[in-house]
Length: 190
Image 1 (spheres, rainbow, N blue to C red):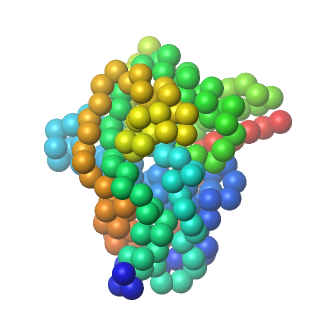
Image 2: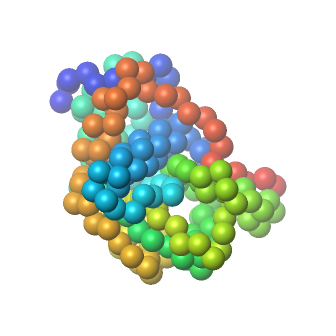
């Protein structure tokens, strides 16, 4: 558990709508899922949505150990790929607007103004309501956890049986220093 696997130049916390910890974890999962999809001939995810409640603690500044990742992600959640049509995507946008929580996102940027969605970009392109999108998330959310009921209505599913924690451990080891990513992915302008 004390094995060093990376280094953090700053504290990684889940404070704010687009926290550096949420951004990091979502990026790591999306990056892994894209590699997994190519290797296993599965649909490549367009974006990642995790839940802020699944992040149990900070990654403190300094040496990052195996134990840190177990503390951040103590659950037995598994990575899943889900296909959402335009109406399910709109349900997701509404959910994020109403919840107003810093759920970790990667590959997607949503901007709300005065309680209305004014911009939705996925992989740098405007949201297309006629398109079906693949999202990487976890089985807990796929089953309606955190009231993310739109996931239970997905058009297609790819169950990987890969533990989120194992994915994070593998991905974190790829970085000598964890990237402190501060771009805004969930924006509320009032």
